[in-house]
Structures are given as structure tokens and as C-alpha cells.
Image (tube, rainbow, N blue to C red; front, side):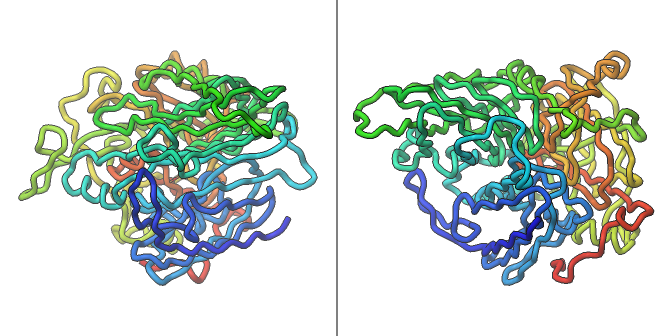
Length: 546
Ligand code: C2O
């Protein structure tokens, strides 16, 4: 194992897409940001220096951060932001993980432009449990905003309305030829015939789950969220924000006389507006002296709201579960939780006009009806130094919703959320089960739920209200997929299990940034264990102060 050093200079840089030039926050002037790569067992050390007016933090999405919670990155959860002119060194080791993840800013909506691939290769003496690819290509799905995304969310929070949406989706920062004024900004994947390519797909979009497909080609899914899965074929992939997947692309045995579009556009069932536009890239067989006017084929994608396609696709994921990569599913549950996830409203402040539901309220989002308010000092700091009782946070996040109702039926009369910085405290090595239930308050909607600090097993999913009597016996406790982000089905539920073997404070939230901003988040506090190697070490000396 080695240590890999990186330097992230956070700088403003002018970038042009769709004939709009704007100054954006970047890492080292790159959009998308630079690749960070390591092998399993390596240490990654990234010095982040903030040269921009905004406060910044960086999150290593999906990295377990075993006993290195100070390096996780969510602002006001594990650290205070890195202020202008300051720096912070993120220092962590990759333990038991290989595959594709990504890094992104974790404050406000800055991750719209601050994101990049995080590639975890197997140890040098180990190979993939699938065919060795000829080439590996990361493809980051993102969004392009003509406006400044920070202004978009600030305005929405102020008026209580839904925010504006992005102007394009992108592959590796390029919207592609289906948008106006975008022909030259197209992602092209040049391939040779008869080869196997490993596509490392990353959905870094702020607010859209995306369907993805390449015309006339079938993909073989081999990994999800940096865990190996039993390979399966599909022409179409669905990827929620925060999810990653490795897929094998076998190119045609001969040079075809054609090029092929790869497309992505949203899967969406919620209310309100969203960016329903389509990003196109081109799969191009690079032939010497290729004819100029070769036809281009387009893949077909499911309907925008095709929930049954999405449920069917996600039900195909299984852990590889071999002797070398066993599924370690908790067979018993020490603590069981039932969390509703969904939208709601909060009162419009006096002397303000709000444009939320009924023109008299603000949009909000919650888990168990609690809309999580960010504290003024990082929770991990407060917890570590034993200052739980100074009013920064409370430990009374409820294990079940405070009011029960028909979650997927007629919405209740009371849509109001309660604000608070509420956490759940659990002892080290607790086997946790959480059922995440979508609600129909202001409409059913799918939510990509992400947990920091752990991978969890997706042991069950279904539509309607979760019913423990009929649903529990059907849980898959043998080979369920292991991931860090799961789609809570629109009008349905998922059940996850994980072993709380990582002391620290861990955020769980919807990876739609608009829902995150509205409060669809909570935090787990996992206590230290008794042994020295079960405790969180003290913070590094350069940990930013609030
Ligand atoms: Cu990818 Cu809390 O985030």
C-alpha cells in the first residue's frame, strides 16, 4: 500500500456551455474536477486550499471512512467549512473497497460544479472478478446551469418556492448535440471493435435520476456503489444521484458503418418542474478513413415516469457473494427503525410573501416529519468533545413517525414539518435495520437516500405501505446488494440493514440537493467501542473552526 497525495486548489474559472460563459467554482480550474485514484489499502491525502469567496468542504462519497470521520466532509456535520484563504488536509485509507465512487463539495449547492471521479482499483496482486477490460472510461453524469446554482437555491429558500432547474444534463461536463449551441461540446467515446470496455458511470447530477442507454449495444452491470454484483445484462441503466455503477460494454466484432448515440434523461414522478432534457454523447468506432456521412442510431429510453421499469431494474441487483467477496448481511437486528421520507411545508415567516404550496407556506422536506436544521458548529466536534448538552443538537430523533397515516394514500391534512437538529445515538456494533417509506404528502416521489460512513444491504423493497407481517418474511438475507445510496421507490418503501461498526457522526439524506436543502436529512451518532481500535481518534490539528 502507498500514500497518494493530491492538491485541490479551489479556484474560479470561466466556463462556456450552451453559448453562456460564467465564472464557476472549480478544483484546479477543471470542470468536471480531477480524477482521484488509489488501490484498495492505499492512503489518500488531499490538501484543499480555498481561494474563492465561498465556504467549501469536500466529501468522498461512498468511502467508508473507518475511524476517519474527520475526513468525511459534510459541512456542519463532520467539519466546519474551509473558509476563504484557509486549507484543510483530508486524510483517509481505503479499507475493503474497490470500484467507482466520486468526490463532491458538500455545502449548499456547490457540488453542481465541484465534483470528480474517485477510482478505487483492486490491490495490485488482485484482479477483477470479471473479464479484464481493454480500457476503462469514467462517465460522469452532471447538470449545467446557465445561472449560478448558489443563487438559484438561495432564492428558492428565501421565497419558499421550488428552485429553477438546470439547463442541460451533461456527460463529463458536455451537454452534447441535442441542445442549442452545443455541437462542439459533445462527449465522444472512441472505441475499437471486438473489445471490452469498462464504463465507470457516476450520477453527479444535483436533482435528477437518469436513464442511460447506448444505441444497439447491451451493457453488463458488474458493480454498484463500489461493490461487486452478480453480473446481469441490460440495454438501459437507471442511476440515481449519488449512485455509481461499473458496466462492461462489448464493442461489435467488426467496424460498423454507423455511429451510436448514448443518451441520458430523467426518471421523474414528483411534482413541480424538472429538467427533462436529454444529454447525448457519441460512441464512435474509430476507423481509418471513415466515410463522412455515416448514420447515427439513437437508443430508446423508458417514459419519464416509468416507475415499474425502475423497480424491476433495481430488483436485479444481487451481491456477488462469493468466498472472496461474501455478503455479510446482519442476520439479527438489534435496533429497528421506520423512517418516512417525503415533502411537507413549513410556515411562511411573518412579513414575507411565500410562493410555496397554497401561497402561504414554504416547501420543506423531512424524515419522520422532522426537517433537519444544520447546526452552527459541526456535530462531530460537539459529540467528540462531549458537548452534547449545549443546545447544538438533541438525541431524540424518533424511531418511528410521530403521527401515523396512510403514507401512500390520501395526503393528511397537516403537511407541516417540525424543525430541529435531532440525532439517533447507537452503541458501537449495533445491527441496524431501517425501513424507509415514501409518503404522498404533496405527491409520491422517488428519493435517492444516501448514508455516510457505511454500506448497507438492501434487504427488501415494495410498493404501498410497508407491512411488517407480510413483508419481513420476504427479506433477502442471503445476497442482497450492498450500496451507499438506494432509491426509495415512488409510493413505496425499501428496507436496509447495516452493522454500525464505525464510530462518529454520519449524515443520512436524500441525494436530490433540493430535498437536502429543504431538510430531508438526519444524523446517526455511533458511539466508540471499548477496544482502542474501536474508537474515533482525535481531530487533525488543521480541522477548520466555525
Ligand atoms: Cu454524495 Cu452527503 O453526499
